[in-house]
Amino acid sequence: MSKTKYIFVTGGVSSSLGKGIIAASLAKLLQAQKYRVTIQKFDPYLNVDPGTLNPYEHGECFVTDDGAETDLDLGHYERFLNVRTSQANNVTTGRVYQSVIEKERRGEFLGKTVQVIPHITNEIKRRMMLLGESGEYDIIITEIGGTVGDIESLPYIESVRQMIWELGEENAMVIHLTLIPYLSAAGELKTKPTQHSVKTLMESGVKANVLVCRTEHPISDDIKRKLALFCNVKQGAVIESIDAKTIYDVPLLMQEEGLDKVVLEQLNLPAPGTADLDRWKAFLYKFKNPKQTIRIGLVGKYVELQDSYKSILEAVSHAGAINETKVEIHSIHSEYLTIENVTEKLTGLDGVIVAPGFGERGIQGKIEAIRYVRENNIPFLGICLGMQMAVIEYARNVLKLDTANSTEMDANCADPVISIMEDQKTIVDKGGTMRLGAWKCTLKAGSLVHAVYGDTEIEERHRHRYEFNDAYKKAIEDAGLVASGINPETGLVEVVENPNHPWFVGVQYHPEYKSTVLDPHPLFINFVEAAQGYFRSK
Image 1 (cartoon, rainbow, N blue to C red):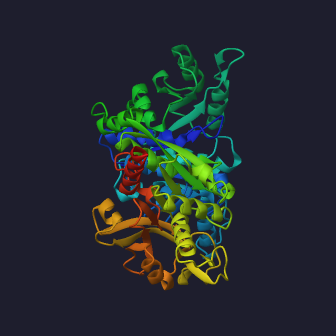
Image 2: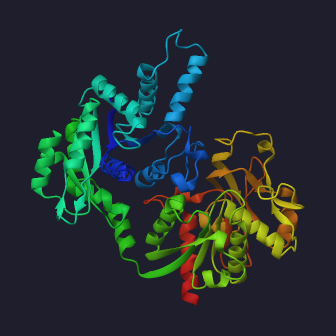
Image 3: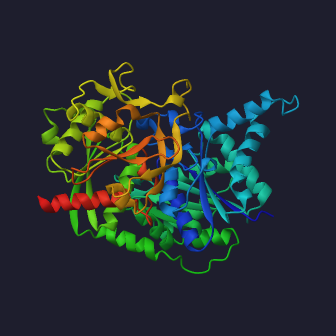
């Protein structure tokens, strides 16, 4: 009998129902019941990881400590659970097939015909159980990407069927997240799409143990009874998931619906009592009851899709709650930001974040935004490419190096203040080859970032290929922009700050990846405090 219990979360009727938030909310409730929980995501696309996907198509690429480029849902998992994820927490069809094909090339299948069943499904099951074999977790929640009925999802659904058969129903279960649409013309919630979705799941041999029903209107007991009858689940296992004002309400709504109790009963696990969510509730109270409002500009090139900067937006929310401040984010497309309209676009803001990104598009707009906030003493935080643009802006406008640029934008520029790393120059493959994951950084004693972190030795996550060119470090520092964070192993500059400015920091790493509800990132907390100070000074 398996010591680790497995919960599979599938979706039906429509995509984008929020399987990741439901999985994270359930995990939070189980964690608050003193169970050791983690979540993993299985994505049915053929990319080996999301690292090569356009943010417009897939949202942000989240990065773990061990350097895995993963689905953005892993960010939700970490923010809710305050527990780090890893390479093992996100698997794609591409990675599964790559692994099986490599084994076939090595002759590991002894001449057998390699097929979806059993070879692909065996590899899926192996990866599904990998985290459970460590003995670190009591419960593992596995989110299956896509929608039931999709061709791409079939091998995963079959793998779930096999695992339930192998482990037994007390050790593995399925939560099916579905949509209950409301027809305004009829004034009714309709259950038929959910019935068909559950039927499709059952045709693959998988029975839903719990239905979580996304809805815009409350679901009556009569509708729950109907769903239970026609979907073959207990009435108490039909869970209403009504639209919430914030994702951070969802764990409390799921607690009210008794989702954790239903799951623990199905898995034959004791429920010690009501989950302790006091700290979560304290955060939510501050989040919903701010004492003031500030306006932060987010300058980026993918602002049409908010998921492109999901971790940044959530990190700002965490920092705002801690500071009892509502942070209004004003998205500003850098491609349309010019020297002529920058004053109009940035006037009235209390702080500006210049976001990460790749490629030449929108670069000049970011540089103009940084020049404006530097000259007008507006709090500034540059992240990754945002930090690199801060260096270029300073080199051009303070050092008067008019040709300062990054070799990413101009391979033959005369003054490459940002340049490709030496070990990147011979790399041809794009996927998984950047500087990734957690790297150490030594902060300069007495610097702003030293005060922010309260330490001189930190560790942050990276995702980039270009760096501050050390050949220009002395000239730039002599002009007033200080390199206040250095990687102790490579000597590469990780942080720059302007001591002649109230709050001006650029970081090569991604601090947003490590901010969680119960442990907001100090850099964002301090940035919001600086924006509060700027707001009061106006």
